[in-house]
Length: 334
Figure 1 (cartoon, rainbow, N blue to C red):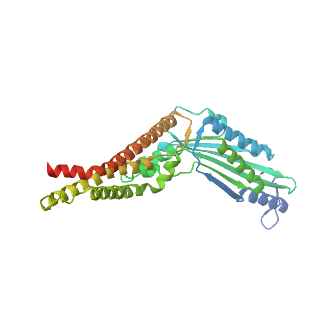
Figure 2: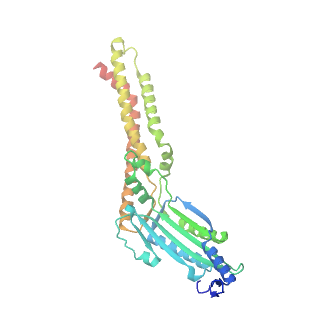
Figure 3: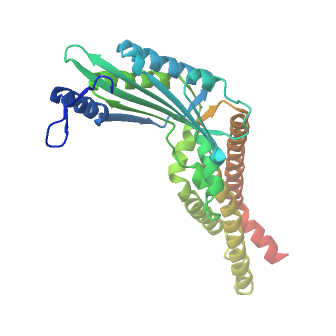
């Protein structure tokens, strides 16, 4: 650019001022404004439970490059930048996909996100103008993000609450000069997202997550109601005379409290298990990722098992309320 801007020096009697060709100065400022002008921007975010491997990232890169080449960009303006962030604050940057492909896959720190940045220009012959574009493809690992949140969260925030958070898993942002061309790249990213494998989540879990906080309250009320109904229907007023009424009240109150306490333990376990279930989404490109994925998968299995145990225990207690009066009668008459 500096080679194209020529100055002619002329000195006059007043002190030797330097004069410049005005047309070239105008050209310089026009180019400067064009390069530094702020383009319009569109973006789209995703919360799909995508399971991303290195081959998926390679496919995303190839699709993006093919889409860029279809716009016939100026070859010398195309730039690629790849940034990887890991848990524990580690990060890496690469200037080409080939360098990224050679990076260390034995890292013990899970990958939290990967960002691909593409910068290029297009010369529009009809308008005789340059168009600048910047595409940012970002893919995030939900399990790595939640793992980091659990480590940094205060002790009073349970892992179940953190696991219930639905985090962003992918995003594309485009700074553009032509909206129609920019939409071409969002369509490409949509197609890539749909082609990724997705984790199979249990739909019932997603529904119960919204009402899990009501399970202990409603469950206890249901058990208390059953206990009252079955005891009232079974009670023998001829047997429970004045001498035994005090014993009956004391025993019934004790059974009422104990039943409610045990039932609440099972119901709370159901609630925390449901909240702790995570619809897995991840990046799997190193050893740290593989270990973290295995740990979260095992946690989901444990959550399902404890939900079944809690539900079974609550049902057993509910059925046992029908025999509460017989137990109380046996205790006060023995």
